[in-house]
Amino acid sequence: MVHNKSIAEEFSERLIIALERKGITRYGAGAYLRKLASVTGKSANNWLNGEKMPRRDKILIIASQLNVRPEWLEYGEGAIASGEGPLISVEQTVTQREDKYGSSSPKAQKIISDIIALDSSGALNDSLLDMLQSMLDSIPKKPNRSAKAFRD
Image (spheres, rainbow, N blue to C red):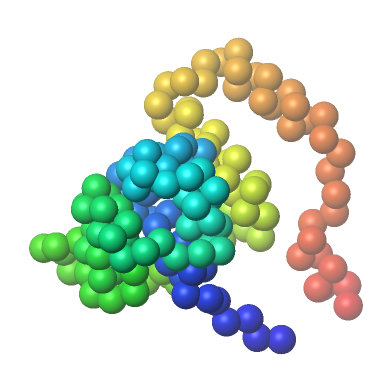
């Protein structure tokens, strides 16, 4: 079965890329967009989850504040920002994420990304890292999902 991404899903991927370029993690993205575009948290989350598209006036506000071209944010056309050559495509970015996170669920990817961002900012001290490691060690391990392909 072929799954074609909706326009809203593709917009969401570009929005997340633009937010990450600005240093905004997925954890704080909803609140950031809510304040920026003067919308409800539900609307902001709908955009982030690829469920709905913002109106054009909201896209212009978001693009301006994230320093990306509105045409790129809305349609994926051209360079991401003025004065820049074309960046890698959204598909290439998604592939890079899959290489980094494997076939992890979006929720697991968000958690991993948030931990990396917290560690990079210096918010995680050794005690917190030890606690996280302890929690991970206590989770029962399942066989590798991709191992099934080799058994069939």
